[in-house]
Each structure stands twice: as structure tokens, then as C-alpha cells.
Image (cartoon, rainbow, N blue to C red; front, side):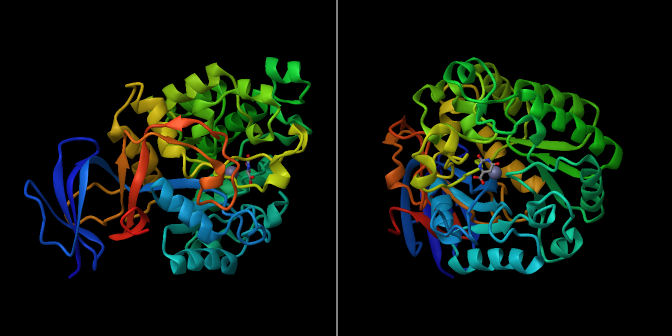
Length: 427
Ligand code: DOR
Ligand code: ZN
């Protein structure tokens, strides 16, 4: 048995303790007051915080098709550096992940690389065209746990009804990108004062909220495990609250950028700030924050969306929507909730690891830090000032909206089943 000791560590930011990991089996072997100094590898964690490995329900790793902007390997590196041990990569690749063999290839590549469990998301409609449903059953049988046309909305209500029914029959999660495309044609920014002043075509809140309302009612009547991608408005929060109060089983995510940034950023006309759904107003960000605190919104998901500079360093209207998120999300969540005293590390573990693992029914992620549990872990230094720089990211792309911003928390080491996937000791 090969062992690793994490001495002087604070699980969930609470009392300091010492942890022994059985690296061979990839599980936590012992936890105790005495340091484990006889382990094969001994790390003094200096009282840093230990959390269960983070789980991201929503990333774009661009493979197959746009390997010039991200691959499963570079995305896994970015994930490990951000503290993640599992990610779900969306189906809007080229080709679209709409058949079992494509989904299986994504999973296999992730496993071969070995830095992060990369779960494929299957598309709801063939080629993401919104016309024909995919073989949800076949893909589910090959291990796909979540289906989404993310990047596009399943607008057609009849098709959505069928998708909900199939997803229910196969007991998989259906994740909706809520955007009524008939209301957002040509839109590049949140419809509000900023867009009006800057002369940018607006994407109104109702384009999201009308789909959320419709889908909540469909979920009420046809059941299934419905998940809302990137909630972005105050009205969406109210609708989710209504749905949950009615006992409708919906779950929802919010991105770090919709929590921290607003459409004030657009003043710069910098294409880095173009994203779908768009950055909204302060009252939306505030409502999303409260919703995450009270459980109306379940999880934080990054919507990590790498794009090359040829698609970002262009006029705002021509920039592709999307922002990097994997390497900054922990720092942003720390800034918004922990630094402000709104929440503690238990909360971070819940919204970035435990709840996403629960929603996707991952048996080995988001588990308690306890003896016998899988050693999927991230060590966090809450006071290690660092400045976000796109060029320094492990991601192949550099389109971070936090360029030059100083954060205080960062992941310093990540372990997947006891094997270190990121951190100073290994590099
Ligand atoms: O900003 C976004 N970028 N939103 C999406 O829904 C898709 C994503 C992408 O694929 O770039
Ligand atoms: Zn997305």
C-alpha cells in the first residue's frame, strides 16, 4: 500500500487534523490528531482548507472539432488547477455528441489522460438542430447521465415535452439552456440601460423567464429531472422559487460571472464580456446570490467556454459568447460568499461539489471527508493573493473576464482517487 499524508489540514475550514490516504485504493485511510509522518509521501498543508474535489456540471471542452481552443486534455488540466475532480462537457462540439460512440470517446479520452473525470453530455436533438430527438435511451445505456442542447434552447414545446418524457423514462437529467430564440435574434447584451446607451441589441429577461416558466409547468405535468442551465435573472429566481414551493422537481445552476459581474462591464466594448445569457444588472446578481444561499438555485457551474482571440478580440457584436471559468470559479465564489461573511466553506463544498454530484448521482464525488471515502480532494489556500491572467492559464484559451483582477483564494493541490492531478509537489 502506498500512502500519502496530508498533515495539518482543515477540512471544510474547520478544526485542523491529519489525514492519511491509501493511494493504491484511492481512499481516505485514517483521520487523526497525530501527524502521519511515516507515510510514503508527507505533505504539511500549513493549516489550509480541504474540500471534496469540485464538480462542474457545465463546461465546454471543444473536443471534437475545435481543438485549437481547448481539448479534453487541456480542459482537464484547467479543471484540476481549478480544484475540480469531475466535469460534464457539453454536447455542442463538432460533431455534436448525439450518438453513443461519440459520448464514449469523450469519456475514454478523459480517463486515458487521467487528470479529471470528464463526463459527456448528450444532445437532446440531433445535430443540435432542434428538430429530431436523439436516441436518449441508447446514450443513457452507454453511460450518459445528462442531456442538453446547451448553446441553444429546445424552443419547440412539443419536442421539449417528448424530451422530458424520454428523459424521465430513462431516468436522466435534462438540462435546458433557456432562451426563446425568437426574442433574441441578433441580441448581444442584456436589454437595459447599458445596451441602449451603447447601441447594442438587447436580450430581454423574458426570453429566459418565459422558457423557465413553461418548462417548470411541463416538469410538473410530465415529471423527470429537469435542470436549468445558467440562471441569470431575478425573475428566473422567482419562478424557481415558485416551482420548488409547489414541489416541482427542478434544479438550477448559476455561473460565477453572473454572481460577480454585471452589464456595467460592457462600457469597455470588450468582447471578453459577451456571454450567453448576457451579464445582467446588479439586482439580478443580488437575487442569484440570495437564491444560492437559500437553495433556490442549487449549484455553481462555470459554463467554461474557451474561445480563441480571433473570436474574442473583435468588435463586441462579432465576438463569440463565452468566458473561461474553471480556473477562477473557486476564487470568485470565495470572494462573493466567504470574504463577505455570507457563507462558509461548508457552503462552498455544498454548491460546488456535493449538490452537483447528487444531482448527477455520482457515487464517488462530493462525498464527505471521512474514513473509507474516495480521496477526491482539493486543498485551498484562502490567503494566497494572485492575479488572474489569461496567458497564464492551463486552458488553451485565455478569454477570462477577470484579467488583471486580484483574488485571495486558490486551489493549491488537487487529488483524484488519491493521485495528485495538480499542485506544487508534483510539478
Ligand atoms: O456563452 C456561452 N457560450 N453560452 C452558451 O450557452 C454556449 C457557450 C459556448 O459554447 O461558447
Ligand atoms: Zn454552456
